[in-house]
Image (cartoon, rainbow, N blue to C red; front, side, top):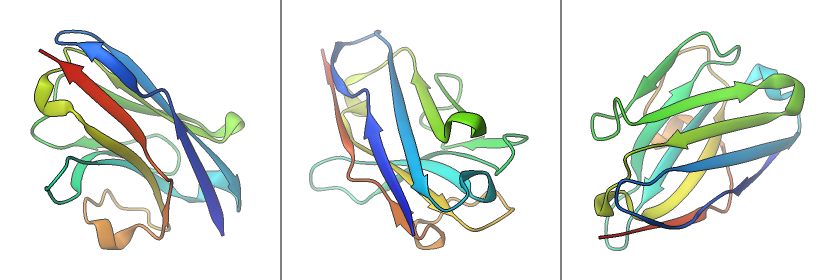
Length: 124
C-alpha cells in the first residue's frame, strides 16, 4: 500500500500561483510514477501532469502546458505541482496518484493509489 497526502491548496486570484505537495508513505516511493489529476464539480476527473519514477520525464495535459510544472524529490517521498498563471477554470480538487509503471500514462485506471485531494479555488 502507498498512502498519499496532498497539501498546498487554497484560494488565489487569477494570475496567481500555488504549489501543491503530495507526501507518500508505505512502499518505496521511487518505484512509482506519480501524477496529478483534478476534478471540478460535475465534471470527470481530468489528467493534469505525470512524472516518471526517477523524475527523468514529464508529461502535461493540454490545458496546463506552459503554466504548470511537476517535480519530485525521492529523498523526501514528495511530488510537487507548481501552478502559475492560474485561471478560474483551474478551480478543482487536485489529487495526486501513484502508479506502478515506467511509462508516462494519463489514464485514471493506471494509478492504483490516490490521495484525498486538496481544493484549489481561483477567483476572477
